Length: 266
Ligand code: NAD
Image (cartoon, rainbow, N blue to C red):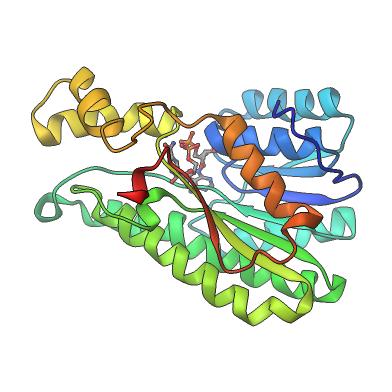
């Protein structure tokens, strides 16, 4: 998919939230470069099996699926420990699962706040907590957190998401300092807008919250923030991910790569 090559043969990667969007594309890029993959995420069982089988067939690697709900600590822990049991190692943990809800703070549903903080932030802690002991035993590991431009700057009506993604950035730095001498790195990727189901769904919500049309949301809200006026592509994100997990990325730690068309330069 990405066309960018780095040799990950024999390595094992978990990508949370990889049944759709960015996660599915990043799993594809890692598999294309030789890594065995554990997919995770919600969705129709038959569609997930089709995705799993097609990745394995296309790239000649082993691809498993674990249905851990990122709101359930025990299931997240099992995702990680069962991966080590199955493959005997874990080289790459990509914390990618995420959801969004757009509404003013004074109307923000409390259950949506809890779900966004749980899936977008707290699951990152639980997955890393389970993965770090395995990576310490190996003396090697790469943790990549899919944060957002909203981990660095804010937008109105996205309070839970912005809070969670800023939290991911803080967690990324803190964990990086803890594991720096053990061959483990922890970094974030901060994309601008990528045209995935998550973004498609929020176009309508943003239109309602701001009282404007969906076309105006795309032009004047989403891509207004992105100086290139182009959605970020999966290939551009795969390039950042493959750098972070490659040997060249070994001294990149507690940091992030912004792939946002210049949004956070403003
Ligand atoms: P998406 O909706 O296409 O995919 C989200 C994935 O998370 C799906 O596989 C879904 O099943 C999974 N997921 C959701 N709730 C889950 C749960 N409780 N347990 C397990 N899995 C769960 O969205 P996307 O746009 O590909 O987003 C992926 C990540 O990228 C998110 O963290 C998002 O915040 C971030 N991000 C997206 C954009 C963008 O423009 N699309 C920009 C910046 C950051």
